[in-house]
Image 1 (tube, rainbow, N blue to C red):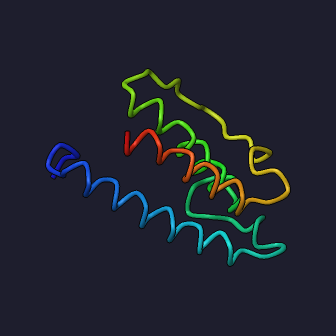
Image 2: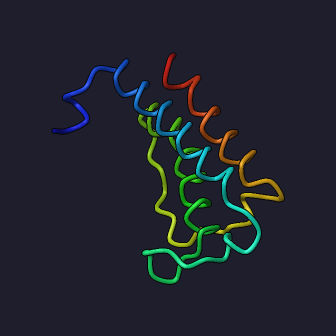
Length: 100
C-alpha cells in the first residue's frame, strides 16, 4: 500500500505516533549505549538517531514539494549535547508544514 492510499490525517497521525515512539526510545539510551553497534553496518546508535533527526528536519521541504539533497553521511554532531531535544525539535518542527 503506497503513501497515496492514506488520508492526510492518517499520515499525520502515523508521523506523530512514530515520532513519540522514537522519542521514547531515544530517552532510554544511556551512556555507552550511544556507541553500541546496530544492524546498519558501520553505524552506532548515535548515527542512527542522527539519520532520523536529519530526515525529520527535511520533511517540511518534502511536504512543500522541494527537492531534498541526498545525504551520504550523517554527522552525529547534529544531535548536540541533548539527542532527545534534537529529536523532539526535528519531529515537532515538521508538524506545522504537515498541518498547513
